[in-house]
Amino acid sequence: MPVLAERMSHAKPSTIMMIADKAKKLKAEGRDIISFSVGVPNFLPAHHVYQAARDALEHDSGQYLPGRGEDSLINAYLLRLEENGFSGYSKNNIASGIGAKHILFALLYALLNEGDELLIPTPFWTTYRDIADLIGAKSVLMHCSSDQDYKLTPAQLEAAITPKSKVLLFNNPSNPTGMVYTEAEIKALGDVLEKHDLWILSDDIYNRMIFDGIGFHHLLKTNPALRDRIIMIDSISKSYGMPGWRVGLMAGPEAIANAVVTLNSNSITNIPGVVGAAAAAAIAGPQDFADDMCVEFAKKRDQVMAIMAQISAVTCPTPRGAFYAFPDISSVYGLTHQGITITNDVVFCERLLETKGVAVVPGGAFGEPKAIRISYACKAKDLTEGLKRFKAFFDEIV
Ligand code: PLP
Image 1 (cartoon, protein in one colour):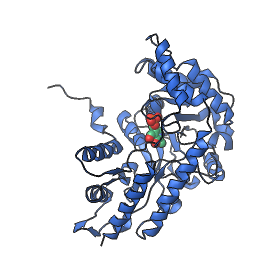
Image 2 (cartoon, helix red, strand yellow):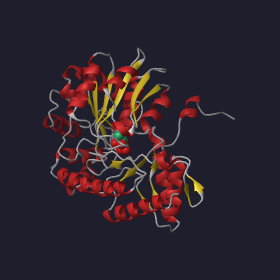
Image 3 (cartoon, protein in one colour):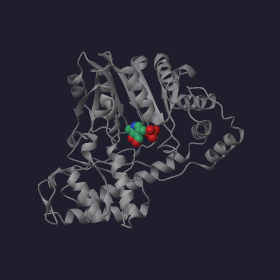
Image 4 (cartoon, helix red, strand yellow):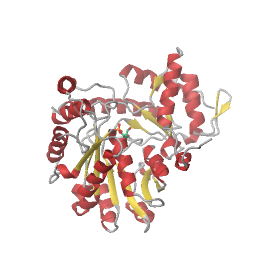
């Protein structure tokens, strides 16, 4: 019997998707389930986005399209970059793919040899390490605990860099923690990076979701000397409520964009035209909804934090962006819930789902087993009810 390639022994399905599927299955069986698991924004794209998709369908030739992305999409992205102060990019600096996940896969594939080190501030978005495992690169996890607001310090970064370090993955605002770096914090990290020859993948996909007026700051602006080594990654999934449409984008040095285009030509060929047209319409269209979206998410964040403040067993740094909270719940490990000992994050999540019907993701999936991730971009009614159950669960722990 022929066997799978050896590399598949490192491959595993996404934990987040597994939890989300379990929650869906229980719901289908008639259970009253509230899902705080998957990172899906609770809004739909604007009318003009659907209209652009319909128009494209009407004129669709069904032919193969450019692997970099169609000009309308690239120009929309370039315009947005320019408007946000990232000037000087042109078509050859851009590539598109089937979601930021695919762009990240292509970039890591293009940049890392087997055994090269990928530096990952931890907690991290699960897929970073999973891709590194698949391509045989070594993940170097820089552990950032809740008492440092889950943020990487310059000293940690400096200490982690070795001659084998090839890429830093920097995600701001962060999934899973919701943390947002200040300008000074980014500048301090940038000063370290200027001394070392590393690629920097800046996963900026939550850049429009920042609260409390702290703004979105970027290594490209604090440390322009890094420009030739920075690759920016963006996506329509979260900002425009379009996770299933699957469009991701990158901007960076020409050689890197070209590498992604080459990989596209050997894998996806092109983004489907209808999807690309919808993405272009979303990116080029009015952006004023983003402020309302941030106001809504900030209110939900406040609601989450109000409950966290009532649970003494929890330590939860206040999220400033995205739509996640990442409470450290490790003080209940070793205690019991209805006679069952909560030994770790996985048991905690299983008990919470089974007894209260609330799905959250174990922090171990993000490299921090002391915590769990709550995605709070759900309906207001579900958030209120889910948080009530979350608190009740803690009240039953002895
Ligand atoms: N990067 C981060 C930090 C994410 O949270 C996600 C999705 O959850 C992605 C990338 C992938 O986004 P996309 O849906 O565009 O593949």
